[in-house]
Length: 172
Image (cartoon, rainbow, N blue to C red; front, side, top):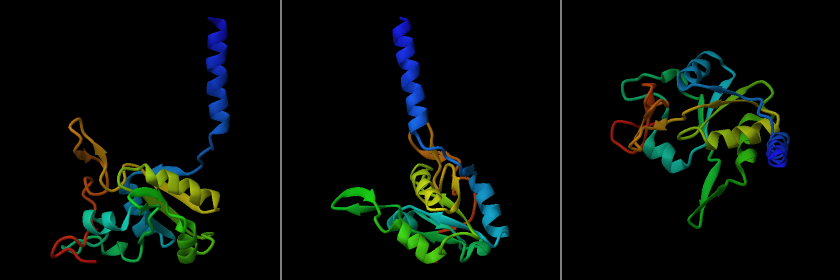
């Protein structure tokens, strides 16, 4: 029994030592909106696919004009892309981010995806590259309820302004 306990504790300790420490902070969609609209050096980096950006929606000015302060503050660079029917890490992700934001010394990037998972992976890559990063927990669509519907938290569920290209009246 003692050997099993020591072995289990050793495995847990090894896993903790081997896993990278995350220094970036998680923020809620509401906090991300406030930061992006009040701090000139803060941007929301939506790492979802282009299809998600266009058809599901993205932070921005809605048809009522709400969210105009987000113009120029939200960028879509996919962290994963479809390659022959499989989702793979976008090999030019960091190059594209660097092309828009240079070395990122004077900015903060808030990574965002659908529910908050891909954005963590993207934040890790950006942080390792020297960017000041925050991760938007719950993402754009939020978490699922017991029936699998996305009804918990998230940018859209929290009532923050968004736009999409998939319907008349919602154009970027």
